[in-house]
Every structure is written in structure tokens, then in C-alpha cells.
Image (cartoon, rainbow, N blue to C red):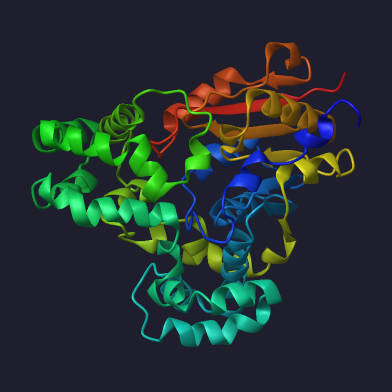
Length: 379
């Protein structure tokens, strides 16, 4: 390519952010929104951002023929490998305890030794050097997940009356949630605390990475997240919402109502499906551009456009429109940076606005400002 496109195929953030740590040990994007939006079927070969693997497994359970899980971070791929090894070799009760969702009666490091041989050499090296994360339960080891727990353990107890989180989670209606929030939570002290903790500086130092905020134009990130958090507590039903359970308690109250891959009804089924997951450690931009046209029918792109310039994101949308099958779909979230295909590309990537907005209104996570679906249309 002679038009500068070579550079567009490199991930900018991959060049500026450390990739040797687990940043997300759980996925904070609602699998129900994702799987319904992508309309997963038995002929779908899905490309998905790997992250911690939760939605990779959810896409498989939704009926996809195959899921290619890609991540530029070897650490994230090592985490997905560990989960897949556990699903293959462990019983359900030992697996959820090994993950850290329940108490383990066997030392987690001993369980790790039972499944270590299932890992690639690179994954073995990573986990051998991160024994403490295994010992503490790997679903808690991500930088962002630790950031959430820091707020719960060190700051929230001084801002909310004892038992408030339980009263929110036990509320039997949105009206009751709103009453608890307005009478117990929405104080000046709490608003100031959350604005600070969810502000740009604190997120960059403890939750995400400064490189992930490069294209954020919002002046008051803390106020934005305060309003999103309020929305999550007064407008979204919390009952059975395991995302909010972890947000408020730092744990799941019942793994049978937790992430899909942890539920016993899905576990045995997954044992027979996990070989349909293909792991790729690569920059998304380069990988998609070098795959044959039609390799994938659907794509879960998480919030990757958040970390690209507007020019780079437009180029990535064009590559996806060229490479995915006709009639295929892209699903992605916008967190702090609005990124969608330009109107000049709508004849190739048709925005499914009504479906996107309907599903975003049902989203059980509160972080994201919008959810988007685009449908591929061949010229």
C-alpha cells in the first residue's frame, strides 16, 4: 500500500500500552445485548475481542459455529487459555472455586498444576509468574476489576450506610431501587467521592491506562460516570443482574445466576464446544486486513474504536466492511469517545439504529454511553 494504509494496520495503543498484565479479568459488556444484536446462528463464524473470555464463551453458547478470540495482549490470551483448560478438565464445582467465584476447599495452585499441561508454553510462563493471582482467584486479578474492588473496600463504606448495597440488590422493583438510591446513596459526599474516583486522573492511575484516554474529549469524566452510575441504579433492574452484583459487592451472590460459563447448566455443554474457539494474539487491524474475505460473518469489537483516532477508526470500519460476509454484523460499544462509521460509508455498513437503541436501553451494565450494530452490505 502506498497511501499510508500500512500505518493504519498497526494498533496505536499496542505501541503505547503495556501488554504484559491482565487489565480485565471479567467482561463488562452485557452478553444478552451482544448475542441478540449479532443474531447469532449455527452458520456464524464470529470474530471477537478476547478480553477475559466471558463473551467469547457466551457467543459459543448462543450457537456460533466458531469463535476466533483475538487480543493484542498475551496476558489476556493467557487468561482465556486458563479458563478453557479449566472447563476441559475440571468438574463444575472445582472450576468455579478455582476461578474465585466460590470458596475453594483445595488450594488453587494445586488445581492449577492439574491443568497446567493444557496451556501453551507462553501461557504456562505467564501463570507460573503470577501465582498470587491464581491463589486469589483469577476473576479478581484484572487491573480494572481491582479498581472496582478498591472503591468498594476502601471508600464506599464511609459514604453509604451499612447494608445499602444489599438493599439495592434485594429491591423488588425499579421504584424501590430509586427510593433506596435517593434516600441512602445520593448524598453530596458520595457524589464528590465518585466524581473523584471515576475522574480522569484516578482512572488513568488505577483503573485503565493513560493511553486509553488519549481521544477522550469530555472535560468532566467523573461527572459523566456519576450520571451513568445513577442511571444503572435507578433505571436498570438490578434483580438477577450479576454485573451490578459485582459492582456493588465485589463478588457474585449465586454463580448459577452469574456469567453464563459458570452456570452448571452450561458447563457440560461447554466441554464439548470449547474446541471451536481459536485464540489469536495479534493486533486486530493487521489480522482482519490479512484474512480472506468472508472468513467471519459477525464481529464483537468491544470498545476498540475508543482507542483509535477518527481517521484510524474510519479505516478500520472500511476494512471490516470489505472482509466480513455480506449481511454480516458488527457490534461495539462507545464508552467516552463517540465512534461510528461516517455517513459516506452507510451504503457499505448500514447502522441498525432502532435495534441498537432498543438493546442499549436493556443493557445491564451502566458504563457505556451507547451500543452500536452495523450490517455489512456489498456494493
